[in-house]
Length: 74
Image (cartoon, rainbow, N blue to C red; front, side):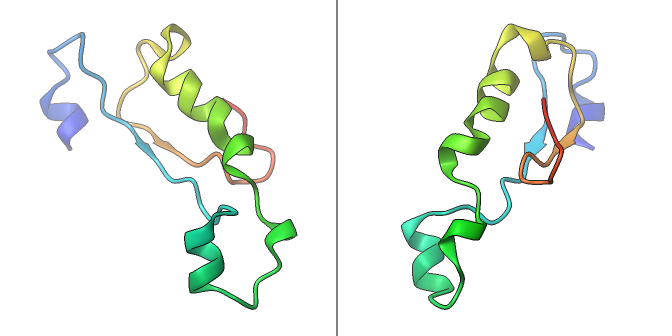
């Protein structure tokens, strides 16, 4: 909805990025029985953040990105 409202502003992009379950201390505290090796690391999903902030994603707006999904690549 916000992306639609700002569609006439070419320098503003609105996207969401859901990193999913990520191997962090906060996750370990919340889910102590979970196998951390089954989770992606912050470094694993960083390329999607970098892509989203960089020039290659120019023109991408109104998208829900889920880099934690198997097989996903930006």
